[in-house]
Length: 283
Image (cartoon, rainbow, N blue to C red; front, side, top):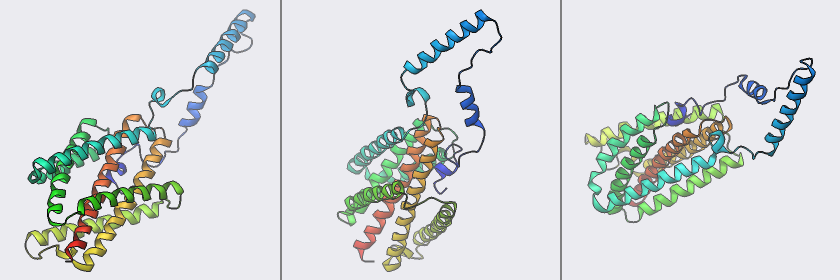
C-alpha cells in the first residue's frame, strides 16, 4: 500500500487465511445434549435447548455497537469530524495569525509520523495532528491567496471533486487495486518525493529561483502528475478501509482510517494549490 497509515497497519492489510472463521462458526453452533445420558437428563437438556433457541430467535439482530466492529459509518463520522476541526482551525489561523504556519507544518509532520507508526490509534494525537495541520493550511492558504486571488477556493473545489470522482471510480469497480497497481504507485510516489526534496533544496539555496524545476510547462506537467498520484492514493485508501470492514477489525480503527484519509486529502489540496498558483503566475 502507498499510504503509510494503512501500509504499516496490521489490521488494514491483506486478509489472513486462517481457520478462525471455521472455529468461530463451530463455537457459535448450539451444543446439544448427548443421547444416552439418562431419560431425565435428556428431557431437561432438550427443554433447555429449546428455550435457548427460542430466546435466540426472538432476540434482535446484533448491531455494530454490540459487535464493536468497524463500519463505513464509523469512518465517515470520524473523517467528517476531523475535517470540520481542520476547517475551523484553518479559518481561525487565516484570520488571526497566518504567520505561524511554519510551526503548524513542523508539529504536523512530527505528529503525522507518530500517528502513522502507532499500532493502536490515539484519538487525542490524531486530533492534535489535525489542529497542527489546520494551522499550517490556514497560514499557507492565506499566503497563496495574497498573491493569487481565488486560488484557495479553486483548490478546495478541485479537491472535493477529485475525492468524489475517486470514490465513484472505486465503487464502480472500474479501477481495481492490484499488487501491480500498488507497486507502481509506491515507486512513483518515492520518485516524486525525491524530486520534490531536491527542488526545495535548490530553491532554498538560491541555486534556482521562483518555482525552481516546477515552473513553466514542466511544472504544470509535474503538478498534474502529483495530483494523479494523490487521487490514486485515495483509491488505495478506500480499498484498505474496505478490507478492514470486511475483516471485522475493531471499531477503534475508524480513527486510523479517518487519519489516513485526512493525510491524503491534505496532500491533494496542497498539490492543487501549488498547481493552480503556477497556472496563474504564468511562470
